[in-house]
Image 1 (cartoon, helix red, strand yellow):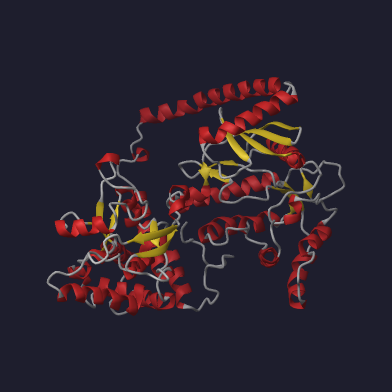
Image 2: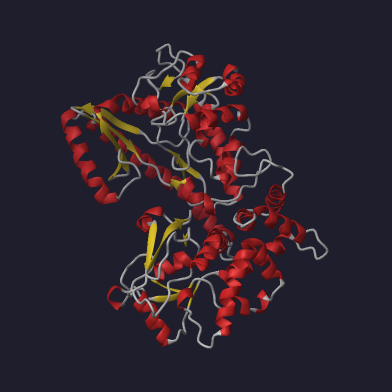
Length: 583
């Protein structure tokens, strides 16, 4: 999702702990010099190199040696190299070679296995995994600038492997190029050429007949489009006539895949001179001033209709509402597709329905109350709870939906300024949440919105037991219960767990899916309040790290900027959560 701007002091473990290492210095220089996505694209040269420390030293030498280049100039050269190694579709392949590849792959796309031809408009493309003219390019002369960047990135061994293929082609008057080509559909070619898909590992026991690879899907393509391609088997249906694609070429392409994807992001995010923001006229300014009032009127109308519907609907008999919810849930997936959870369904009129067994009734009631508290005490953009009922063996929670996409899907194409705006908004929203008073009257400080047991995916027992705590000491005992902690571990735990923290209202699941942003990168909503309740003040921070520690830009540029403290608490939580099952 990107390389962060804030490296120094980051809690992310994706950066070298040794601040004197060449890698840390190189990433720091890039972060200080470039904005996203340029920063992320150039950081890929360091982070995906065969030898990261060697590549880092090479980069630092290039920008500080006698033939000193600027960081921006190195970026330009790196982008030029990426365009040269990007897979290419051949337009002038000899007919005999085309027939060989067609027969070898059985007329199917090597990735999707779709039969190619005019009947289904999936026209075949004969694709070079790596351009056969790579080293014939004048910019790639041996010991030239781009050649040296390539060598520093892929290492001497892979460079020699590529050289041996080149030597083989030169030595033969009719070289066998079949092992450099694959048959792809136009859609899969676009994914493959832009690094969205790559063959991650070499086959364990390849034969002349077949080879199986694991398919890597990067962050810039929805996984549901390619989930059935996780393992790819290449079959040679013309043994003796053609060879399977060379595994070494796939290995080189895979190493470049993330950088190729970021190059696509860079090209996509280039500002245009015809942007509407640069063409505002006085007339347009007047028009835009009228829009908010019209929009506000529409919002008021929708809100009024919703309130009327809600007041009528909740007076409908429970058995009828439950019957309606079951029917709606059964057709929801066919209407709108899978939401990512078996327990939540999208409904018409921008409504969402949680469905569970009667065991979930108290959790649904608590989430309903959380939404009511957020609406009453804050300006946080959250769903409105409409109905929460239990009938027979089922429980239902009906709520409104919000516009926008999860920030995890948008972060790759968000500018640093947009990310900074998200940070400021989150700070304000979290401050508002912390002022919601605990008036449950239950006598428990750490509890859900109704004073009952918490639900937290970090604490497995909370899904099965009624867990609520009179104070933070009791909560800490739960976190360490039955864990195999030695003396050193107890020493590390003692200081954060002996400190007293304010107990504040907490969303407790502010992850990449639950923070929604609009097309402009502005927060449009915060959803999924089922874990909300009163927790120690650091819990929001540590939970924002939970399960997403690998997303460096999220951690360093968002989470760490919203919460500049709580590092000791995070360290202990990381240790404890790694030892305790979350189910």
